[in-house]
Image (tube, rainbow, N blue to C red):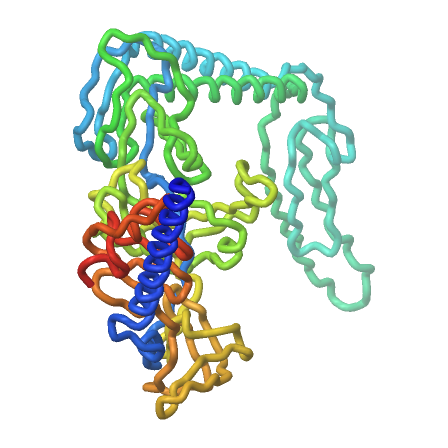
Length: 509
């Protein structure tokens, strides 16, 4: 009987404690809901329609590169005799960087010059042809093809008839004058007839000596011309090799690396590499070229130059569709976020990046920096923000206040304290604000959203049974089997009291 009484007493005590706990939880709930002076209207966040600039941007990050960074190497092989620069030196275009022993290149140039001389002589001989001796022919009486003397016709003056000079067989012919016969006698006294005067002019030409003729072999001439072209090309190569024994800076900049020292033997390189661009140019004083931005700069000497600094970044396909050449951008650097530089989109690659996979397609874009980039360095991390849409001096509201898009968008407006939903036409959706094309006026009060009422150091999220108003830790009445009340355990809703237990609303408010 005694055990039954003890059990009954224990049950009554537990019921009493449970009743007290439930009653306390009810008071805590009411205090959390109504405490802090918060009201349902106080949870509404409002704003005004203003005028300003709406910007829509897309962002990405990448590493800086410079198309002016270039590596140069010797165009001849040999032993290094001079290294005139070190890392960190500032150089100018054309400055000597290093030299190798030119003996081998000089010998090759001399041999090439001799080969050109021989080829030129062979071509001259081929063009002269082979001489052929021919016999001279005699003239005939007609004077047509006579190779002998060429006589001038005699001019007859005062005669009624003239003589003609016929060509002899290689001799000069003198014309004979023929006088007019006397008229028949008549009964009239005879009249003395004057004798005709004949003037003869003879020009004698010396006899020409027959000359030999030649025959030219066209195939031999063509072969000799080809040989001369080949010899001249080899001469040019030899001259470039000799010039390449002296390595010169193709552009101004700062020496970034030197990959050799005096006494090293180097091989000839036809070109060097650069950090930007897609083409290359060779230099006679040691080749130089530029390659894609993904190619590291290499060479006996590498020269860094921030001129034309740029970066290549990749955008997800949704953002890449908005990026176009010529769009403005801003650049910030990880090394110093306070530095903001203007930039511009140079171009967008129409093909996806090689690392793109299904569902994760990206497209590359090249961004060129503007302004003073002298303090920048290749390889620095840059954060790019490209302006893909912009609306200046336009009505704008916070984007959180707008539901829907385009002509079907709507905004909640407060008119004399009464909330109304109004249809508007939305324009550019920016990063923080949205352009309102029609439906609102500057100064209109709009509802941006609702926020939880705050009290003390915490806030409440409503009647969900969870409170974050707790501040200082506190004790609690023990609850049998469930830990401390209410900090150490929970009954019904979850109630937290700062970092420990406490009465509902946990200590200070």
